[in-house]
Length: 236
Image 1 (cartoon, rainbow, N blue to C red):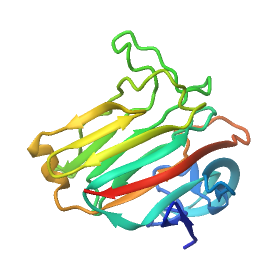
Image 2 (image 1 turned 90 degrees about the horizontal axis):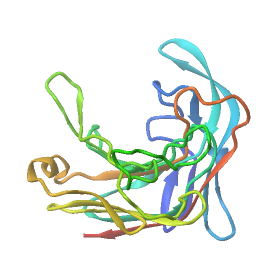
Image 3 (image 1 turned 120 degrees about the vertical axis):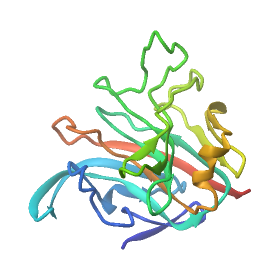
């Protein structure tokens, strides 16, 4: 597997289990879409780059290559942060997240969603302070029927700075007693319920940063660039 050194850590340029997700076959993890510039900024791109895969015994053409990095190291309790400028384009799905195998649990520090106007701005009369469509998402455990429990996506106020025009900080403080997520310095999610935190106790989490497309991306080259200035981890 191809690896890079960035921000003091080693990263692979695909998921640990392969180059493509069987339920998201419209994109694949393309090492050519992962670049580090002379400022040591990480660039995770999207671009049309068809490639053939065999999924479930059938040949599939995956249309777009997307940039993804997955940490070689696993991390325990601590403070996680990136400073980043989100990509612009239609139906994008950039994310900063962590998971532990076997899945779940999963902590999505953010998942960004652009609309067909290529931006993250949203209007919701029921949540007037949720200006930007960059929610958090938490998966805790599996039920007896095998379905994973999702604590539901949540968007909170994170200021008036456009996340596609400015470098903003996205962070997660994860300890035995709290899971607190901040966007641009604002707390957008905080979990203190011991029953929910129990599912993360003693786990080691793999950190992933990626650019991606939502299902049925629009036609075209669809180039975009998710720029990450830095990644930080401080052990709790």
